[in-house]
Length: 363
Image 1 (cartoon, helix red, strand yellow):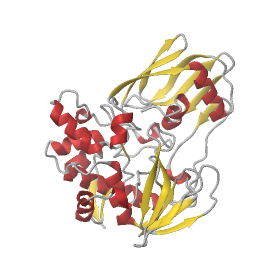
Image 2: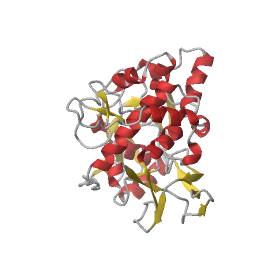
Image 3: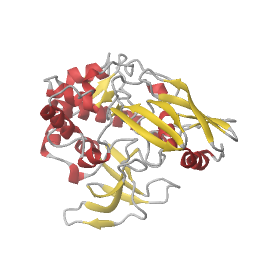
Image 4: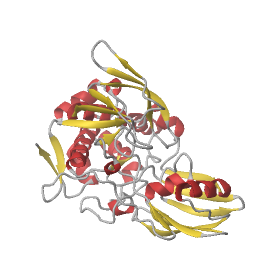
């Protein structure tokens, strides 16, 4: 199966063809819009096309074999010394999510914005000229240079394995860095619908605070890339100060509305994990509601909040957010899954914990 990957670049793509037929994208971007955004030399094996696909869209598309893509994804999402069962579990869900994504029609989701409510959904189906991109709202893809022998072995050992729901359909196997103690439901982050296997699951595994330092360090090192560790030292529980003036400007840039000086921020709706799906922002000029989960994170912080699971404390010049978790929290928690693997749990046990009612199927 061939999959088309959109590659974000810093400006016009800068390419160099190598003697072995691979192509180096000198100015690829990773973590676009997040606090770990950076330029990255990305080595690609596959057919490359370029084009003008619209504002904000990658101008570079690579067509490659699905298994080559999965090898890169699991190597990009975690480090080489990750436990084999964790890598296997991740290979299965990354393959499932990719196949399910390219099997569905790629129509951009309508944004249900009316009056004073601004709802935006970030998902792979907003892409119209390729299947997935290399940004984190799809799956991390850092090319051939990221692939390790351990990840290649795990992908080979899970070849053709996918996760299915109770009806035998390919599961929408979402995942995030750290759920913060409880996983979230689909509708908090995306469309107003839910899936039986993406239910709230209590997850004590992702809290590493009670572990010995050596074990905690081993788990974190296995999951988090170096730039993740340096840019995000605390994520299970975190605190963030945001400035009212800067937030007002970001709201206006994102919605076209000047709310004035922000007086208060009030959650309108939350998911089971505590993640806010709709947030009411009251200003001296206007009151608006924004959502969903990722849009809230992007509006409140230029480098994107770690999650939308936070309590709000007012201060004179802004707000203090007391938060938990990293990412949307739906499906597999990478920190928790790694801890389970370190504890001797198998890939199937890990997947059963985070996607209850699913089965592994070979296709």
